[in-house]
Image (cartoon, rainbow, N blue to C red; front, side, top):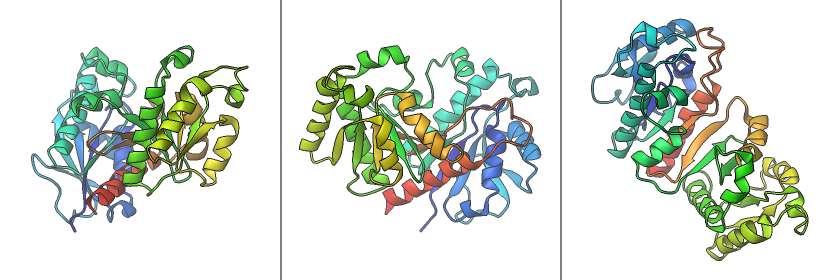
Length: 333
């Protein structure tokens, strides 16, 4: 069987994206999982190879994909931008680099939708630079949802020991209670169940967290549990989903990390990401559920303080590529 093709977007050329991609592609264990095509900039990738100081060479592909058995020690690149050196200064993204980031993502999505690639894995971007270039999105997730015409999507952060999904994502904490509705919680449970079952584990057991301490303590600390979350869990159960909740967040993660649950539905960003990053700071992967395509990403930012030093870890990038390959293999089996 032909190895799945994973397209990797270079991310911000002013950050650590190029060098962590190079380091990840230098790992021998990746060769057996998939073929990789990088979408990016030749100058930035050449600099990333110099910074990473790994024995690889760059091969440009104007069209098509890497061979069924890619050559050892080769990084296959499709050039999507041709940036000037002033637009690739470490830690100083420009409008031109923001425009380039946008085009890496849109080309990867196009290839996945057209069936030219089995999935995509993304290096970190600078959202402000992309917005200054005229592309006003909070991040990859919302852009990909628009490109794939996906009205309902879910952010999942995952590692070997824990998977968390978020009902609300990048929102001020004060706004979260007002954003929670029974329909939104139920939709998150449904999408979590469907895609975890599709790609990771049959008949997944899903824990749904409370918003307030001690599940609201009978209404003393808030009523969202009885008014919003419990009805959503009960509706999911009637649909045959193995969901339990609302569960108190201060104890649930102990049991989830031991393997008693296959995913945890969290009400807001830090409720899920603090325990996830405690366990998977280096190898956590961001997965967008609900899309018609496979998309994984590193679970960190552009790390301008490390860009160009050669010290940035490739662990999350490697994990993201391997997870995309594994998901593609399951889908095609």
